[in-house]
Length: 76
Ligand SMILES: [Zn+2]
Image (cartoon, rainbow, N blue to C red; front, side, top):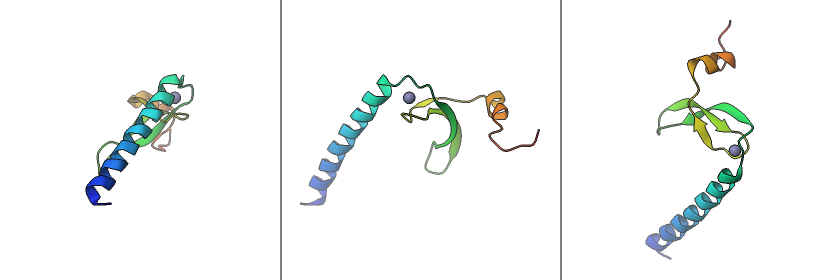
């Protein structure tokens, strides 16, 4: 199989996997919210609220929320 076909097959698989993840995430009620460093570009990571169960990105934590969970490990 040449590269073109292999890539096409993999892209199809990827689409199916993404659809399955979407499906799971749409059924999840996101009860286990956690703040994680999420890769936002190829070089940078930013803190985001994500669901611990389904891994869905739920939004941006505020400065207040980050401090509340002591995300950056600062001393109070
Ligand atoms: Zn969830």
